[in-house]
Image 1 (cartoon, rainbow, N blue to C red):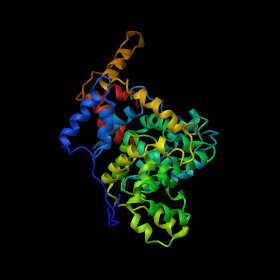
Image 2 (image 1 turned 45 degrees about the vertical axis):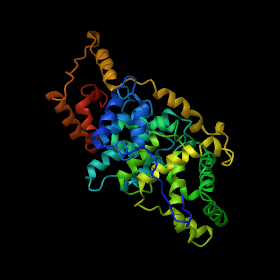
Image 3 (image 1 turned 60 degrees about the horizontal axis):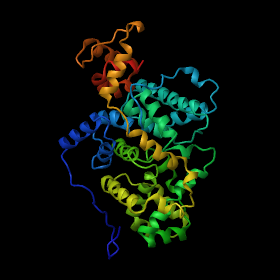
Image 4 (image 1 turned 60 degrees about the vertical axis):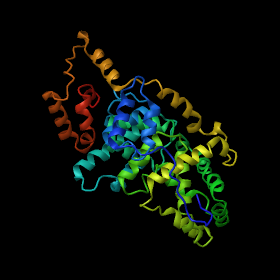
Length: 392
């Protein structure tokens, strides 16, 4: 990442730019292919601009995790809080998470979302008692909740917790330390001078802990930047957040090398992540590093055997599951057929976005649930009425 004079260089490898209109068309084609074109969606999520809109994220994010949006978990009841061992800690963390909600949001809307955030996390932890809550888990959960709404957030968070985030949810921090151990071997292969300086300073890798366990949601202020990284990480290998951490450090090499070579100085600098990073260039660089220095090559240096990482070990299985998903148009028809049986006694609303009853239902949800409903109202109109059935 440096030229012969030692200046920082960010490579701009990758396919040429395409127009927004062309990208939207390619995403639509990927989502409506049967089976869904996961590779096409991944290319869109990684390439410049990511998935572009929250409406697209609500359709694409579930596909990356093989989640059927027409078969979501039930809405948690308040009984889920009773006697839950993590309730008090979750409550405290959620109360401290005000900065993660949109600026200017009304207090009553924020209160609704905070209550949903608590129930979302407790539901996943109750269904999977082998998972252990960690501080920072709420940063992942609130990002999902703000984009996709409560029930879909539960489904996505559950899948992430048992795959990409699984090592962070062990009873000890050992597995998390192993993931952090990938950071220095990547830096060593790209910039030996920087690696040796950091090694002499004994700064370690703990400065990047909050980056990885929250997918940078805790340390970035701009929600758009956070969503851009979530597009990238959801479409990538579970270790990509570590590669991105290495890219940030490499990008800041001159700042680091100007520091006093001691742990407090270097740690203090690296902990304060810049808010104006060139995200698109860094994402492209992280992709390059992952290809050039794959986890299998770094595993020995990172002192990590693949069998010790549940996230890494389960990723191939998750990838295979995503390859056989039906498009939402097909899933919607399947749901319609299920609910159209006379013996069920269900009257199915006509599948049209202009139906007045559908509009009234969406408006009713918005009035009742506040900001959370607004987060899904756009796609509710398109996916109605089946999508509405999943909200109640």
